[in-house]
Image (tube, rainbow over all chains, first blue to last red):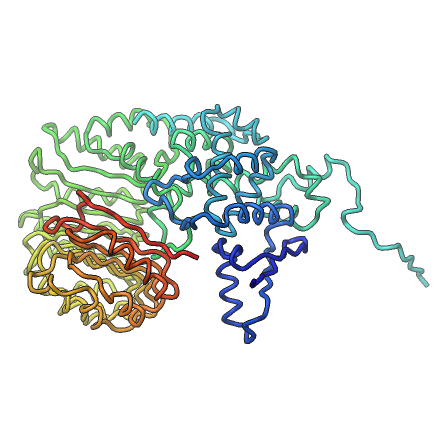
Length: 169
Length: 460
């Protein structure tokens, strides 16, 4: 079985099958680039992902392993309506997978899934964060993400006015 | 002599600082810097763990836009200045990106929401809506257009003076915020004298305009004369995209003389009976730097003249769209398109074929193509029957094709077509997706009635 070595930003190496790695758009491109530039067709590709740390990379690979037999979703799936199809594709395993994670880890997973072009994982993580925003008041969103308002003077009022025009029309 | 003391070297992660000091250090960092800091050092990652939600929010929000309902997205604009700026940028950049082809997913984000907001909020098709908008925002001087895009209709009411005052007041207040303007004349209520000239004069109030769409204006001789007396059109220094539907060659010429050299996108749509006067050589010479050209027509004169003339221009086109609602000779079109074989990245041909051509299969036409090395997206809507052998031809003619879109006519066996393409999709090394739309013959290609769509993707 052909393998590829994927190395995280903090130097942890993960040895995975190329078949599995190719389910990530980014890793697939990297493997193909390596193949073209390498004289030795048997050589094992080594890919360094400098924007993802080991803990997050492990989670991405774990998710890919679980979903290795799913059909690959193109990056522009649902382009027409723009929405992910997370609800359709989310399994009990996915829910159990995400349940223990705190918000910071989920957000890191979103960045990692986006960078590695793993559409299915991106959909379910985004849907999870979306559920923490939709239906909440502005103050509740600020509390959930520990954000502070930095609007000055009547800036917030102006923004409300713009929003109100959009909602009423 | 000074004596140096060698301390044992200390690693940065061993330095213990109170949390409030770290707060000061990380306070002014951008989200990207913060993310890099957590990646650089596990100790910092642990230290900043509980702040991740706050600091990663600006990085995640642009990705989330695809998944958020409009109301939620608008709420996020109220969270803080960074969120507001991010969302506004996404909404405004959807229609105004300078990139011709957007291969990155990020560039598509927000386009759905932008379309809805534009359609619902900034379409001023009635005088009442303009007045209501002015009343809603008149005490504020900030930019009220989330998307920067405005549709203004020339549906002139009975009280012309009052209506014109409203439009001018609207443009004087907010015109400098408009980046994209769609000026459309609706003739349902009857056009008024010199309205077309007045419409052009509105452009004086939109100095920051990047995208201009002009449609529906029928220029009468008296109005053309009046415009020519003005001599010069408003100066739109930032205009890069002109989308025009006009009945007057003189007006088109005036527009292109004014801003032709700065245009990167040029769309000509559905020209009225003025077409016999069209001088393609002059048109192409007036827009020398265009990268994207769209020609949508329903006029046989244009259909006949286009293939002969277009080949003579020196454009470095990256995107070309030809949509004809009259019968065309596809062989002539392919011969004209061959002029752009070294630069074209996206090509779309949508047309009705004459009866003797319909019997041919797609492959026959594309055998006459040059090799298009840069072509990534090919959309063909020709209502022709068979696609047998098409991918074998495209393998030679478009070796780097990523996406193929085909329109086929009913009755076609959807199951057979799907199976054929699933077997052949791997022929082209970079082809990721084939979309086949099946429609009844006789319906125009741009309509979407009773169509079946099949998407074949490459299986890894």
